[in-house]
Length: 634
Image (cartoon, rainbow, N blue to C red):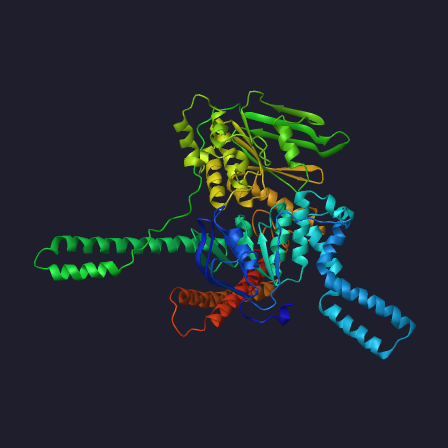
């Protein structure tokens, strides 16, 4: 419980190195995890993020160095493939996260029976103790918390009675996530927790994690998620770790500034070394030979700086010009999709023109993939009209990647599209997607999820279609690859229909949105129109969700007039909060300078604790400021 936690380090890494065979993953890593921190762990696919999580959990042991953990520290992990045995329902499995409370409750019920028959003093005292412990640990609300968590990760109340072992893989992951969030473990290690969640569930998770006092280490490629949850970023770069005290946006800014400083230092040192070497060459055999020898000795003691790398290698590609399609690409009129007798979505009405980029959004299971496959002719509609250009070249990205041939090698997947191309041309093309050297002869079956995604994108781009139909194209891609895909899609001259839970991708490229929920399709030609609809729709009857695309949205008090006196009070409150924010940000800036220029004798534990407290304080102040602005109608 939060009130009983001590304020000391939970996990300390000192000089940790880890290799697998000849492959070095981590070298001389040192960092610590403090109570209540929310840490985002980022890095390219294969950089060692999962290895680091397993080192924290104690699943792996380091080759060198030491890992110390707080005594009796409970660590919770999110298994990638959870398994549920027995005949428990979804709700019963969720309640298992509070077994300690269930045991207390069972003992209380048993004592109640004894008290009803013979209310002895010692029994009454024991019951009072149990009741106090039950209340203190939130026993009277654990069932409500369990139901809220299950609803939050996307289960309906109807699904509460479903057998947990009959769930799909994605549903089992969501159930496992809910159980982990409900557990009483102090440190949670979350590996891609937003996988299998729709946008609303991701937002619920963000709110839950922001408000929890648990300590979090989160591996995620969801940049919106990291911005809203993480207060610290650890980046695995090469075999080392860089530590940034802030969210993802802060990390981007600080990382760019750090690389600029390192580049300048490298350039200055390189220039100095070159001058010394030139002096030595000119004078080693002349009258100034002693000075030259002294400089040679000095140079031998100088450790050359490594040239900074701007970022780990990432895919970089662009679409070629495509043949212009007709202006009107497709039109749906009164379209119903799904299965006879069981439609998923009905009365769909919209029109797509050349060059438009449509994002198809909605909860899991709402019919997004069925709609996309129907629109490109892979499925037949139940009823209604679907008009589209039959000569249109379509590139379809299936999130299951079923179009790849598992028994083929990487090079053959592209050769299949163009038998006239030389091996050199195909290899040069594949190099844009990080398949170089012997990688092009890898079996497709042996590729990782990220590699398969890159290969599928390579196939689609090589075919140069007029319309892209993309079903979750950023799944399995790391942040660098997602950024490269966004840049390429921004420059694509054709038409795009895409399903995604990646809110960055929607904001970057979508010109229109189609949102599916409860069997209905809602069409929007502007992001702002979609946000306003979300704010004004029937969601007031549920827990309010912020916009899936941006923090904030329309004020619920918009249009209401405030009295002059009330407005003056709010303006004074805003000024007061802004002054406090400036003070806190100033102290934070001073502490960050001390991190960059450490001095001996500093109590670093107290300093880091003060820093963490200030970050929490700053977040609360910004929430207060936003609330005042909302009241003012700004």
